[in-house]
Length: 389
Image 1 (cartoon, rainbow, N blue to C red):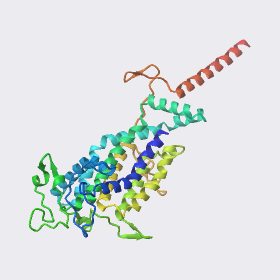
Image 2: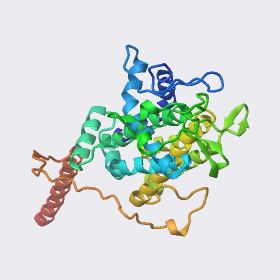
Image 3: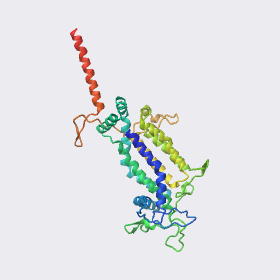
Image 4: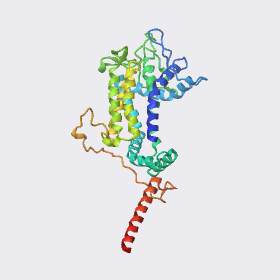
């Protein structure tokens, strides 16, 4: 049950992303916001400045996310300055973020896989206490405790990725379209742009300054001069703009979700696996539907982040439930062992002390012990009757 709730929290966060992005975009759109949202073809953007907290909740949200926005924006500007390509800068920034998140994401994968490995014991608890939800919850909680598993530990990495994703949206959609980001590049009175020799493409600081053009060039030459700061949806389907980048992102999400599923028959009867199978369709569909609304650079970030996740999952989980894929079951996936496999901790015996706290057996362990005692008594009783004859 905890694994299912964990999964629901993960996907609820992702599904809510667009609503929160819209709220922050509105909050950042005022004169005190992190950025303006007006179209550059109609009116120029005001300078990009840190948001200030206000009485309304939108400005408070924008203010809370401003430090993360500033860190990501400065990192993107530095990488763009060193590489000369905003597309490569987005990819490198994604790698830096995911390297920072390696440890918490690994804990999430380990916790998720161990929860899957405990599913047979959880199913036995549910069978034994069928109809008594309170006893089922208590027995499951005790089972997880004795095995050293915290099902809620998977929330942190998802929360961290979510906290990064929203400011990344504003960095790409607003930071890359602003004509004067000078204030956002100031850290403790030091202008990072001046330190690295940033020269704005719109002539900021010169007589040729054009406040209708962005300071940072967001064209990606190796993607056909794609503008990273605006949506790219060249395909139209029943009036909905479809982005090729969104299609790639959706495909990678399908692969990522399948790799987190248990292998083969182990997924049957697992409620968390069933919930993940549903998200196998829902999340990629959301990506495709919003491909024509979100900026192209955000999908570049999401694609690179998903590829990083796939590599980490391969090392820890192997191929998981990826195969068979459309009937294809390759030989290289058969009996494949991951480089860093997940092992289930042994249950702590009764009376052991772990982290200063005495550990007790689970209800399931007690029931199994009682059953073994009964069987042993019956066996001795039969022997006794035979001896009496």
